[in-house]
Length: 356
Image (cartoon, rainbow, N blue to C red; front, side):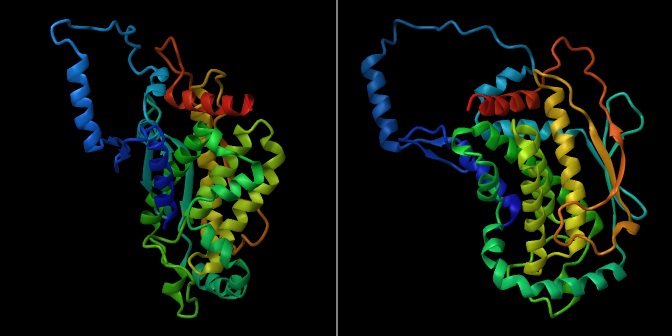
């Protein structure tokens, strides 16, 4: 099962958490009634309700349009749709002569703001990288259990490092799910644009030990998502800084395991690390910008050019990449309340940690 399918499965499970015991959860997350229960409810209502009496309840006044607080009324999977729409609608993807760039389109500004740019490696780079993939195959017996366990999002591994206890922190789980969904959409767009073949397409000696995904090789989706979640947890957890080194090493090891398995080149992970770190900053900026605390901090625009593909990304989590300047969004205009739905979810997740 792919990483993005695993993320969707996790969110589908959250959508069913509120269902009544006598109800079943459908594929949409909505409750499906038990036919016997429906018949019983019809008969019970007929015995209880006086059709002539009439009863109209007084509801609270409606919330203002697009109020963040309304998010509390919706099922988790509905919140995911709303938040993902808000995030993606601000993005602009643009192919370049050497690769592709992701930008944030700021309303009222003619020039969009850069998020990340990735150039496609040359065929010569991939030829050199094939030798690394073949060499790392020696680690397969040692890493096989990790590789199989990390086919889906690495909740168990993140929890082992930071003791997440997500069963009692549902909003944190939603926030991680949102990060994974955003990463999946963006990485797939880059994969399509760059259209890089997999290691097994270059050499019959690779012989992957897991199914080769049916999409492009660069950037690595596992690396993108692992580094994005690592940065998210570092910023969300009150003592996230003390987990930073282990989370970064976990993200690096998860990425490397994909090369050991034979489905990714090391440069795929380098591109994924750059994309994941930047998307993490981008997401957190928008969450904090619309939260009670305000702020946001911006994100650092990053570029991975052809000259950066030197065959790096071995076992160290910190890889040097070209860095741009901080990109700051202007304050919200024309609003008396700058809080957003993204800020609401951030506040809710933050409270889960403060109260524990």
